[in-house]
Image (cartoon, rainbow, N blue to C red):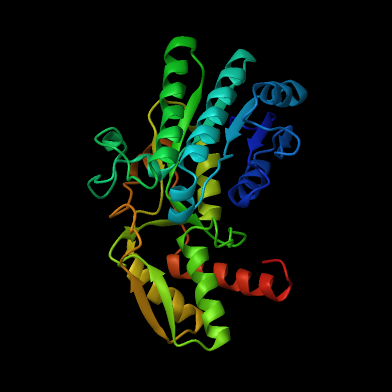
Length: 316
């Protein structure tokens, strides 16, 4: 039987892009309740607010998704904030959950914790073989510290905390705000606006040579909940689809799917970020039987269709 069945489950960040999908997936396991706290109710950077959340709802399971995050530009502008808020949320939640006897804590980390020059595909055992890429480092190190905390609490207190490392996510409902969005929504927005304005070229950050791997949001939710339901070990686990694409090829594909035939003007004065990202996802399949299902082109089509509909309805 699933470890979620009949259990009260708190999903921090549960009202967000990934969180809504995770809550829906948890619901398939017949929990006794799902709580998705909002920041207006509980500020997770404040110890008293974390205590209040756990005391108000008395969860059996905590799935910690809440994070302060953005693309390369947002990371460069907010290194202190991204380090502090992400670190303190994880530290407080793990400590207060431990004190209250929470049965299981699912810590959702980030691909940004890997060293800058990790051999491809990224294997979990390479996580400590160097420092993260500079623009992502404060965020990546803050989330990486929660892995250490989870392992330390398991060792000293027998606290059942697991850690997952999802790759870059995308899908319907993503963040399309140019100030904080990641590469796929940022490119979709830019390309569609250029198409509608009849422009003949668009500017794109970097050289296009860096590569990334992307995971469709519903696949990510299924992976997180599969781990919550079946995985109990200290070792971190990658969540991805095991396929990489260069930013140049990604941009060209988005242009094709959006119907934009103009030129791409690459701005090499802007950073590429981490040179390559692609995960070894074998541990997830071996440990709890999960693998991604969505084909990348299909997922992009769904994301573009959602965004175009949202723009028409004034929701984007």
